[in-house]
Length: 210
Image 1 (cartoon, rainbow, N blue to C red):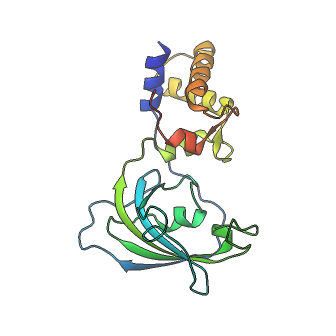
Image 2: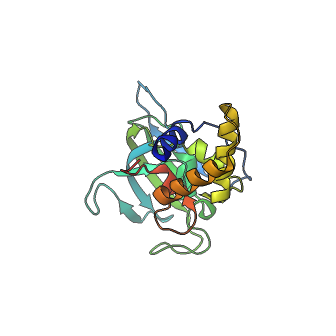
Image 3: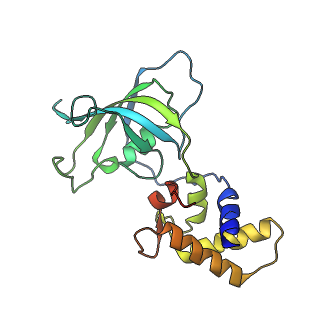
């Protein structure tokens, strides 16, 4: 029974409009190329296949998916803070085949701490080509609706509150025992690192057993 209820729970996740956040430090975006035909634009929750190059402010190449490593484009899930925040902001409403240049300030990149070869308070320039757009396996908007305190992870309390609302929405009577069982089942399946929370990444990437 729980498996069928779990399937119902997954299929009943609803799309919501995310709230406005605090003002961000300015990021510069330039369209370098846009295809004549655009059948679909990228949105939060989509899986994007990207080629990218990153440069320091002096023009020194930091990394390139075309010339470094396996020289293959990379998959990126838009809108879940999988990478730097500047990518989540700068890659929205993009068409397959489109190329953009993003100049991303430290507050939307690696901040005051830096990371690896990137010094603290570094502005980075990215040249990005969107190769392909695919549907994300789960809805980013649904995660935001469930994430009541906006900490980018789901507690068991938040999941149970969402389940209660869904029961009411579909006309089912309250059932705290069933909600508890469902929440426990969800966490058994989804909390992969067993830290007591479901992160945005754990939620967004569909697992084989679902």
